[in-house]
Length: 306
Image 1 (cartoon, rainbow, N blue to C red):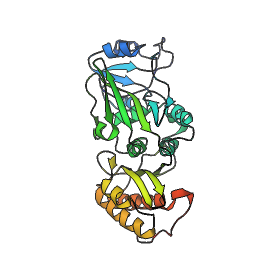
Image 2 (image 1 turned 45 degrees about the horizontal axis):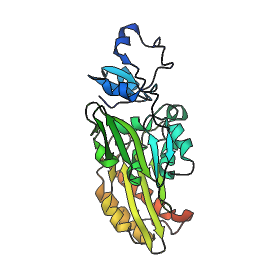
Image 3 (image 1 turned 180 degrees about the horizontal axis):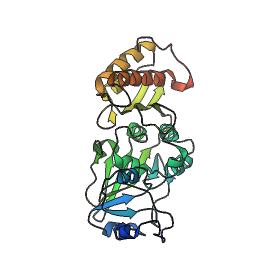
């Protein structure tokens, strides 16, 4: 199966919106068992905010399989002990509403995702499967240590988000697999956030993005995880910067050091949206802002050297 969730076509029993010449390439499984039994050149449709555009532009997808009629799809959000399970098929709006006050980094990413209309259609699984290095929902999932459950007719397996992403438009999904759920750790005392820099507030692809998760203590930051978007072929962790921050209290001196290390960990390019130099500066500034906002207060003067 090609892991490219796309939109449903309204009423699941009414294919009138599908041209007659295309109806033979459209499937409507009612259960995951029916889905697992399908074979061949298959593209999965969930929200459709990427694939329909690509199809309009001439890309061929083979048989389109609408997932919105699955009767045994998991709920959008399930709150467990220390973990929150998200459905790959749920629209982003439903996930944001179901989270309540949990996972603030992911909620912030969803808030600035495209537009309200697109958030009502686009799914978390689709954003992951599309594997764009600028995907909004992916950095907070990486920073939080999320794990995907992938299913197929042969069973299921669990894969970390970092291992799932192989390159632009490439994932570790095998033939016949789909993303079923996303498990995200929900740890007390942990602070999470997300910063997106783009050309405008809505309907804009990230120029850079940064997600963070850490636990502030009196002796410094613990369990630091950073994830950067649109600065490498995939969303990436920044382990060297994490090591610099771990065990230290946020100060302007630490911000300068951490920002310099972060610049060394990314590999941005020049493209239509921004230059590499701008991306270096923007993500360094995003990290300094995040450090300055720990515990909800401005803890130090932002240094001019950034």
